[in-house]
Amino acid sequence: MDKAPEKVLTKAETLKLRQKFVGPSCKLFFKADPIKIVRAQGQYMYDDEGNRYLDCINNVAHVGHCHRNVVLAGTQQMELLNTNNRFLHDNMVLLAERLVSTLPEKLSICYFVNSGSEANDLALRLARAHTHAEDAIVLDHAYHGHTTAVMDLSPYKFNAHGGSGKKPWVHVAPSPDIYRGKYTELNSPGQDLGELYAGEVKKILEEAKADGRGVAAFYAESLQSCGGQVIPPPGYLENVYRHVRAAGGVCIADEVQVGFGRVGTHWWAFQLQGDDIVPDIVTLGKPMGNGHPVSAVITTAEIAASFASNGMEYFNTYGGNPVSCAVALAVLDAIEKDQLRENAISVGAHLIDRLTQLQQKHRLIGDIRGCGLFVGIDLVRDRNTREAATAEAEEVIYRMKKSFILLSADGPHRNVLKIKPPMCFSMQDSDELLNKLDEILTDIECDEPADESAAVQNGTVINGTAANGIVLDGPSASLPLEGVLLKCCV
Ligand code: PMP
Image (cartoon, rainbow, N blue to C red; front, side, top):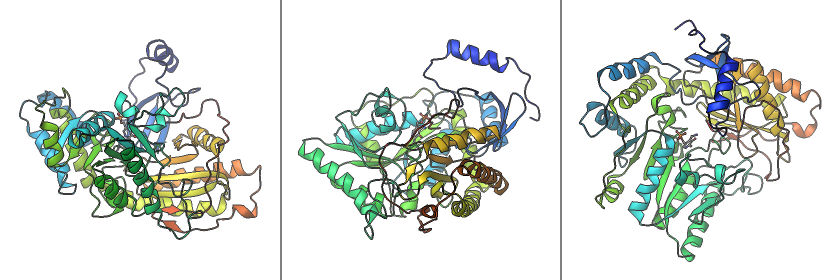
């Protein structure tokens, strides 16, 4: 479609109706001047005035907004049939077969659901049925969804303003963030950071056991997204999985944000930790339907048998319907035919490369970490103390928006710029983004000339992470700018 559809409502009218009829806790991006998007294509979104925005945040529109073959697959199936999965239908079984073919052999049984939250909620039920235990270990700052159970698994939410706090059955392990977490290259020189962070999980397992509690599951995003684009150190999952399994628990990899080839080299982000790393359950979502609500839980035959053993049926009205499965199959086709994993490798490398150059110039860039089209830029006020540059990150996002580039920030200090665009993001798009970032950082920094300490102290890239400095756990300075993108986990 070349033209925006005719306006039905003015932006002001839409806003007024939203304020009147939609729950006030449903927040908008850019509260003071929200964007009314009317159409999108590929990596671009268009507002009601016809402005084109470069979309650097929509990992949901994985193969590109409104991908023609995905749209066709959905509409054609919708014209033919849509019903629940108690009828035999080819789409669901073909999708299951196709997904399983991308995963390690052991992960062979699928359940189809409609959102990442539902997938993580079901994963908890599977883990509990298999282990007969109740508790779960999660990573600090994690987000696993919005149902009652998974809100309890999400420190990002239960520790936030208005959150309900940590429940006794939930245990929180430190995020394996080697830049500003508990263990870093600087405070633990020469030590195995993967082992150190895994040791924290082991400690929790021992304490739970001493308290007479059984741990059903260890939940972790394979790369923490809302937690600040964290890439765990090598050996982390291997050690954690060993400890968790020794204690009788199962290991769940949340691939809702980072799966489906976003990391480029692999289909699934947990595979970055080694070919022999195999979770017991994986949860999939967001990119799976390119915007259409479809998600899945994939597990082992043993866990599926435990879940079935009490005789209770699992039925989900929409999960695995023929339309959703047609859409998800078309997404898998597009990833392959459009060579999107290959694109993620080359464009991601270009992003990291150019960001590393910008880091020489801009003292605000503390750390750059990423794999494929999942990249984080940790902005700091001081490279020695690693004080989070929260207000500066907000300023960058606000000014990017004015330049028609959509970017967001996250992490506990909201100072990590997140780049996780549709997978068709090109070299030119990267340059457009980074040229603008260069310009904005130059402007922000010009008030305070860079000093010697701002020089890059250690440019080594470890598993995609440039790591230098010490732990910063103090409160970050926060000067919220009216109208800036909210803390968001999209
Ligand atoms: N897990 C992760 C890692 C997520 O980022 C999200 C959503 N941001 C969810 C689960 C929940 O997915 P949904 O919003 O589709 O329920």
